[in-house]
Every structure is written in C-alpha cells, then in structure tokens.
Image (cartoon, rainbow, N blue to C red; front, side, top):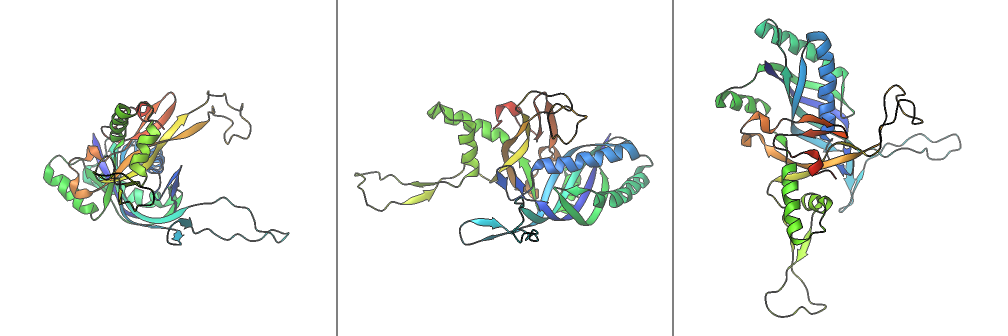
Length: 311
C-alpha cells in the first residue's frame, strides 16, 4: 500500500547551485539523497520506506552577478592569514530556492487519518534537521500525508495545491533518439554532441538560396532550435564507476576506511521544466534510483537504460 507525502513550499537557503559541469539548480541526486536520508529515519520510527520523489520549483535566486555577458558567483570574503595574504578557498555556487517535494511512501500507516496526521507532525520536527542540496531548510509552509490519487479529479486537486510552479521531468530518452538521428548524418557523432545540442545556445548563418557567398558580405544569423520543444535543461543524474572496486582501506585518504572504494564520474542527462497543469499522471514526474554493478542513476518514467546515454 502506498501513499504520498507532500512537503509544500520548502524554503531553502544557501543550497548548492553547481552540479558537475552544469549550474543553476541542484542536481536531482540532491533531492533523491534527501529522500533517502528521510526514508532511513522513517524506517526506524514508523516502518515506512520512501521511493519516488517529484520536484516542483516555485522560486529561486542564484547568488551571482553579471557584467552584461558572463556570470560570476558572489563569493564570500574570508579573513586574511597571519601573513596578511588572502586565504585560499574553494569556489562555491549558492542559491536560495522555494520548492515542493512530492514523495511516494511505501508501507501501511496505522490508524488511518489520525496516523497520517501524526506522521505529518513528526515530519515537521524531522525535516528542518536535515539539509537539502547542502542548504538549510528555514521554513516549510505545510506538510501533509495523502492517499494516492485514483481519479482525474483527485489528481487535479493535488496539482492545485502545488501551483504555481514548474515540475522537473526526465527527458533522457530524447537524448538517445537525437543521438541516433545524428549518426545517420555523421557516423562519428558522439553522445556529447547530442547532449550539447540540448544544452548549448547555438547560432547559425543563413545560406543564400541564390548566388555565391563573398568574403566581407554581412550574414543573417539565427538561433538554432533545440532538437525538441520545451524548457530543456542539462542535468547531472548520477555517478558511474570508472575504476575497479578497491577493498576497504586500500585507497589512501578515503573518507571511510570501512567501506569498499571506487573512483567515479558524473553521469548527465536531459530534463524538462514543465507546467504542473500539463502533468497527466504522477508516474511521469517521479524520479527514482536505478542501481547497477557500475553505478547508480536517477531516472524518471520512460528513461532508457543508463548505459544508452552515459556521458
């Protein structure tokens, strides 16, 4: 038996805005990591397990400034060293955001509606003690535990509770399709080429239909549309192992000497920010873990196997 936990309008300060080579919003791994940490605590206290997580963004503010072209992160100024020199630091990208999380809960909640209210009260005390994407949860407008919607009207009422906002959907299947289309024209095309078509802003000069092109003549430039319509963004969706699995303690300076160790690299995919009113079912907006012998990945409904679009 499954139910839903709605964490409505979490206000998070100083969340991590950098995800691998992308920036602007935390990676989906942060949100599933928060769900996993919450699931471990609820398993001990209530015997429940949390699986899928949907992310709805209401508002965000990236700590960055621009000179008109390039953006730079607003960094903190650390105190000088004893020698009066500037202290070294790691560049960090931070942001404030307001999000809603819709989490799938597996297990039986005792005492019906009274048990759901008790669970919501417990989560109000528990959630602020955790970090979301490295940021601090400073406010939660409302927490509710709901039955899984079974009709269209129930789904619409749930959508209205999270509006206005945009939900993140997995579109990595489009990446695989676009890569196959590129191979028909260029056998040397890689997945990186296909991924850049979704993430990069490209301009192309128009070729005149008649006449020849002469050096020095002005050209008409236009923006190259993305392979698919929609508000598409590059995403970091997991980690892929790139080395053998070393026994505990074999790698120097590892954080944990009791756990096997492996070197990894980030895995990237494509996501879409979509208006909540366009969602036809909850399954299409839930993200879930998918683990293999070589890594773990965050995937939505209809996503291909991770090995088909691993960058």
